[in-house]
Length: 389
Length: 234
Image (cartoon, rainbow over all chains, first blue to last red):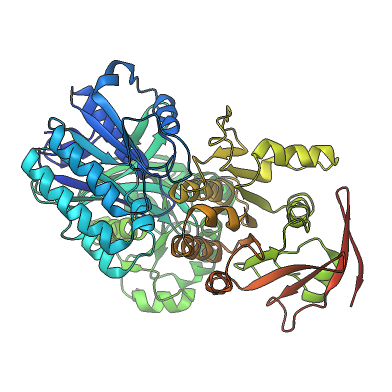
């Protein structure tokens, strides 16, 4: 086994990547996916392994600088880490590296170098810094054919192959192959986006050696430090007496409220762990004089539950205003149609109409006091946050 | 009031501003002052309209750009400025990131450039709660020197989409006469309009196409120091 060195990922993969297997980090453009390959280099070296890093989109020297920025001491591994330089030849510059792809816009030159390495080096981890750059230069079909061969050869020679891939809008066929049959394992790295990307996560799309349950983790990249898991904040807001505290408590494995006379005056706080996702939940007070707190909490949240009392349409104007405050931060949101058990409760569709909500905004029927629908709502919001990957 | 303006009064008066979510190509021959026009739009947006400006530079270093403003006594509100510097690293200089400058590893590293743009978008849009953002890429021509047209198209396809989604304004500089017509035509599909510059008989002319129902007239302009002077329309 080779460790990816990425927190939680090795655990999800049953310890790491077995010898002879291939794995792709499949990143949405704009998220820091390429760090995953780099951190896997370090993960391998730390465990005494040998590593080859194929540099295609910048100079090997710059990669070495990046490694330093992460605080990873590579000096002790100097004779265990090799670079394949396919960048300097591209810009017509000289390369000092041991392995150089002299003609990086022809896949045959890559083939020759990589095959050579696979056959000559002891079982190693070979990491491609940017498969997409190779594909851009050499063509989609040609590159996929070459990758197929390298993966086969790696199996024979007991190497581990790891690829960083940025999912630019290539042909659907290419993207399907990369997400599908080309690799033994696919790790997706995505951005949480409403109008801009404001959070990053990774998840296992496939792995043919480990049982994959649906798991996504949010992460941040620290310099120094590398990839770190982090726990997102989710905001629960809504008018007075809509049932926010009840909802927070129903959803949370543990929760506290700051109350006076039975209504929340500061906030509710809870933590939820559900199907591999975890989140901190913050409930805001409903009264207008506490609106600044909503603003304060919105800025740091990943998503919003807006709780409405389905029997009380007169409060919808207020609810809409509260939603506007959080929406201005571009956050994904879900409407919780609470108190569905009470007579006269409006149906989710009726609430959608009254709110003039677009079709794609989920309105989830819930009875918070009986914990009915709360976890469904959580899943719906997580799907909105992670784009359903 | 319109969503964005260029700060070039004569042009803004004709087009009445640029709608949010627009992607505009700024195209003109070498040495026609495109940089200064872009700097002008940047200064006007940041200082007068409280826009946040993200500039991707593939031609000169971030410090060099900031020095230009200093030298011309234009005070940029730095809390609204973000520069993605794709030059400094490859020149082997000691490039350090700070609040205003992020360093991409090379003009080939479109993935890296994309990450830095996204980070600034998040920074301005979410953390600073400023939804009026301009993205300037100067220039596509340099990027096209290292990557083929399909690659650049895919990159722009993603980022023009992000500009639309964020309600921002994208301006992309390209040299005319450096690329074949086919390449320009391919890229044009991604844009809503053009800021077009041409030189004729030692005169520089500028107009905007595609933003208003009819192209604006050509305006003659002169650049004196930091000053962009429109002399007349024709």
